[in-house]
Image 1 (cartoon, each protein chain N blue to C red):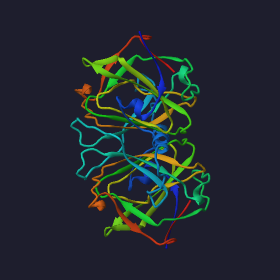
Image 2: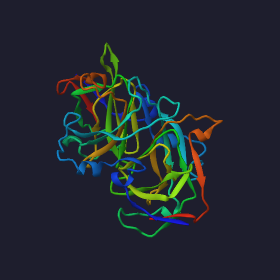
Image 3: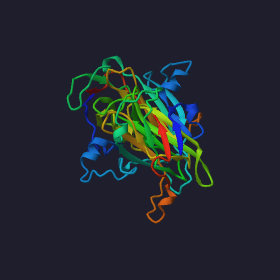
Image 4: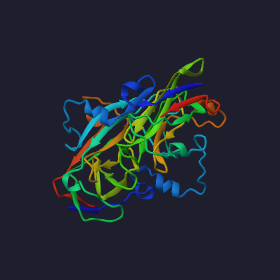
Length: 195
Length: 195
């Protein structure tokens, strides 16, 4: 059995698993908060998250996910404070040929809106010794690195659902679905996250 | 002088200018609301918005914009009801070699969060006879079509700012910035949107 306690998502804490778009964090580090873009009405940061493509597709797809919290996660979570809620991970997946970016829409930046669970690889399987989990705010987007193992999206909070715009290169080859997505399954209770 | 009244953003109303990711609209049209994705916890819609690339870059950039509402727009707007606020458009821009997607983060789906202003082209300039403006919700993302003229992002609402994850192919050639962005400027009051 593997148990991991969820951490707060930051650029540094996630860097071995991918990249994130984290406005509050990035802008709090800026010396000069001059609004240099859009005729003085915006701050612009370039290339904050990396897209990678090893698929045969030329351009990525925009997919829409409407994700529903499971009953035991349909409650308020506060960033940085663990409420000892246990959540079992029954599948991890990876996209061998593409990064995948989840951008949440419709939740405020003050709310803990979703949980990401990631692991590195050993012998083509998730290396559970590297399993980590991160609570994410309503204005943080996450890009899973190319081939990074991760749990399917896990939504947190009292709302009914959370929408994501999701960017990924896909071949969508009905004969070879594994080109886009490989899964690894676990029994209930074998892999647990404490949130 | 050109004056246009802002409309509600829908897939149909925007289709001549680009594509949008509009969860409430798309999901309300679905016959079968079965949660077929993520082990029964999500509804997934494929290829909801199109990415196009005519640049020399192989992969798009993720840029971060933190946009601040101008004082006269720093108030609550309600979708579908016009409050006769006049806003002057002083610049339109286009990206000749790439679509550009703005995904808002941090605002609820009930709120009017931003305004997009678009126009088609005539003789390499914006065709102001095709100028239209759309009010957008906190859970709607917009992809400007390749080469579509548009105003730099205009944020609406009482919050201090609105963050966007923005996807675009860019060459970032310091010697030839016009490869990425061409602008057309107008005098104050020449082009007005009523919101």
